[in-house]
Length: 207
Image (cartoon, rainbow, N blue to C red; front, side, top):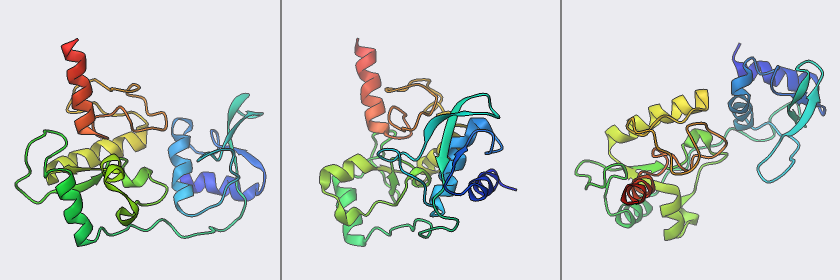
């Protein structure tokens, strides 16, 4: 049984009660990632803050304070998030805004450019609708990559989601914000924003 299924059964067996995510997830080190998988399926939890559905409580089994969440309904209240297709007109707008340059190298893309979500799609609560974004917001949410670089990023992000460890960007152990440990934000990682990572590293080198 998958870890998120184990945790979901614990939530369903204790509906409307605070449930420890640590010992019920099957792997305490990945309880946050396991919980996200359940959220993606459309299950509703009590909200404790902006984009937060957890609180720290004492667990009699773990014998310490751990992360707890409360399931509000036994069945999903909405379907899993859909992918939103980028219309051709918006695609051309994004390519022009980002100058047809690969975010990882800064070089011009001569092959077909791929529009990459800076925050990987699997970490988003819902997909981003480009039709609702202005130019600045487009630059905040997306970067351009070659097909090869997009594949490298996908592998890096998959590893991060699995282990909550942000892989070094092209084997360079530098994060402009935070460390290799994933703490709920992708910012600081070269895979998240290749241009900003490179600019911040250059500032450091000049010093």
